[in-house]
Structures are given as C-alpha cells and as structure tokens.
Length: 237
Ligand SMILES: N[C@@H](CCC(=O)N[C@@H](CS)C(=O)NCC(=O)O)C(=O)O
Image (tube, rainbow, N blue to C red; front, side, top):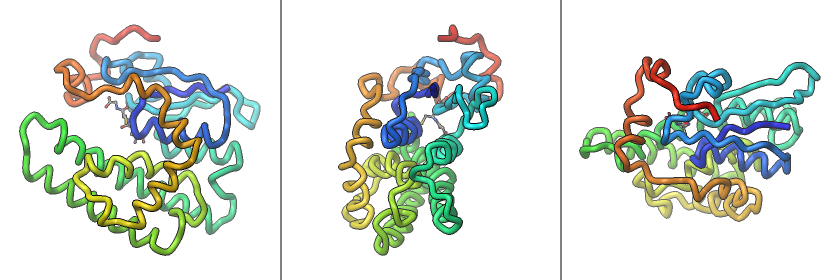
C-alpha cells in the first residue's frame, strides 16, 4: 500500500490525479497545512521540506524497506515507473516528458504560486510583485500555447507532464490571465478536465479546502523561516 500525505492544493492534486489515472489504491493521510501539520515531527521525517505532497511506498519493487519521497515531480516519476504508465521508457519520449515536468516544477508552479501570492494574499498591493509574476505567467502560457499548437499533449501523448501542469493551468484566472488569449492551452485544459480520473483526483478532500484568510493560517503559511521547524509542534496525527 502507498500512503499519500496530502492537502487539496495544486501540488497535492497532481498525485491524486495520477493515482486515480493509475487506478491504484492508497491510504490518504491529510496534512492540514493551514493549521501547521506540515511541522509534525513524523511528517518531517518523510518530507523534510515541510510541504505536501509526500508518499511512503510500503512495497517497493525491489522488495526492500519502504521508500518515502517528497517533491511532486519525483513522486510522479516514481509512480510512472512503478506502474509503467504515463511515463515512457522510450529514450526520446521520456526526455520530452522530463523536460515539461521540470518546466512545471521550476517554472509554471513557482511563478503561478507567486502570482497567487501577490494577487490574492499579500496584505498590501505591491504593484511590482503583481506585475512581475502576472507577466511571467503570461510568458509561460505563451510558451505552452505555441508548443500545444502542434501536438495534443505536452509530450505528444498524455503523460505525467500534463498531470503536473494542469492543476496550475486551470487556475489561470487567479494568475491574471485571459485563457482566450491561449486557445491551444484552453483546448488542452478542457481535454484534461474531461477525463474522469482527473475530476475524481481533484475532488479528493475538496470540502476541506479553504481560502487563506485567518491570521493564524497566514502566519503558518507565509511567515516561515529556518526556525519554523524548531517551534513547538502540533500533535502528530
Ligand atoms: N516543489 C514542491 C512544492 C510543494 C508545495 O509548495 N506544497 C504546498 C501546497 S501546494 C505546501 O505544502 N505548503 C505548505 C507550507 O507552505 O507550509 C512540490 O512540487 O512538491
């Protein structure tokens, strides 16, 4: 069995969507990042970066001791390899998938995350931050749009790269984008959204999702420093 340490956010959805696509049973372990569960000692041993998602695979293919993993991209590569789907063994296709997966991990995800921060969460409007990340998202949507003009999915066939990008791209409005400016991305978002496994994966724990408005959650999520992991911890769950 695989344990999935999760909260309903874009990075969490990548893994619930992939597990739904793979039709693999798993044990869901909620980590309420708004109340500080990401600092629980047991979670930090699995995810030292105090972020979801993370997994523990109790039955890895080598028959050895459990494997724990954090970083959604690494988790997707691991599951794609383990179950032999959505992540090719073919040299060229695999590099295409890796390239767009890393583009999401180092580009779309962090830039969209900062756009959300400056556009929705910053206590004052900081025009430079809003402008910088809205523009950078716009550039990234342009890159994706040009690429998708010539192929159905990011690496040709539907893969973990699409599952990594979709949860961020479908929140384009929050990033200040007009998706009609990117018709190929729009077509791609709609095609992925139509997949039953994607809808199923994105529904997991959705009723727990809250906007980050209260002061305590804001401090937990936006006030972190190196010493945050040294603070009194919430009870392990
Ligand atoms: N690069 C990481 C990012 C993970 C991440 O930022 N997760 C957020 C939720 S989307 C989180 O756990 N936030 C908790 C916090 O900020 O303390 C990944 O892709 O796994």
